[in-house]
Length: 318
Image (cartoon, rainbow, N blue to C red; front, side, top):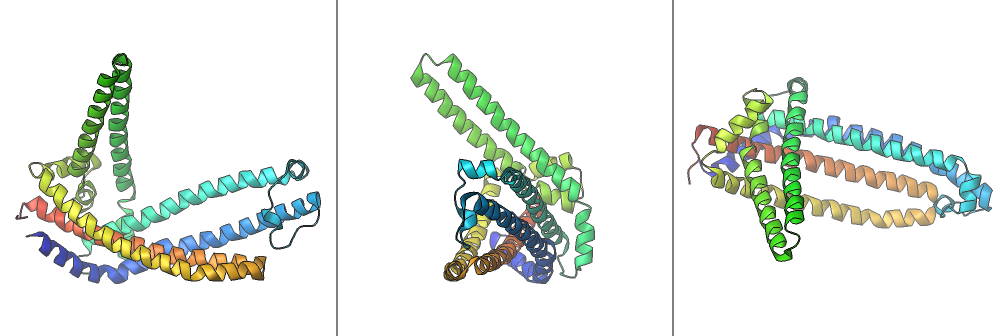
């Protein structure tokens, strides 16, 4: 089976999984983020209202629309003790939001990966997808963590080699630079070599229900002897997915540009209209981005899954 057949098969499976992937996008990506956005907006609105009120008391009357955005002076900071408390709260809230958003994207991508592997006929329900994907939550997370450790170890090893070699040959600058350049290329080659050898680990983990280390070992065995061919197929698939993602991103940018005028108008109308318009714009961006993220994740997962299946049985022809 050639690459054209892989794309054709993936397209048919994409259409079968489209409805379920949209449900996953709504319930496990868009809706949680919109709720978080609403809660964060209420918190930040209360914070700016409180800070603006204290600044007004310290520095005199400010314009209603922009008072809370006037830079803090030393006098204001001294007289408004809660500003430091709000600043700490901002940092904590942003940190928590980053973790929660990361978890949301991980869960949605976990479910997309699961349905791409197991929902060939398109008959899986949302409940089945949730139950099935939950069985792989910690295993996939462990695989990701182990892969990060491996690549971090490789990076750290080459960094240490570079530092040691530079200290040894620092008396001969030209030689030291040549060694650093050589180490960089060796690192680059080893890095990509490992990426390709371990690329199918998530699909082995799901499809063959193996352990984490065994999934990495089997992925390496699948690619062995066909590294360049695998790299070529992965690059072609990645370029196609990137091109489609680029078109989606252009659409999202056009949508954002259309509403920039609304934001500007709302600023002129007053603070409340500005906040509502900003909330609407961010919500719209979240919806579009989430759908794009899930659909592109589904497309790439299906393509790579079918590539993995064909590589596993050795039927890919030139």
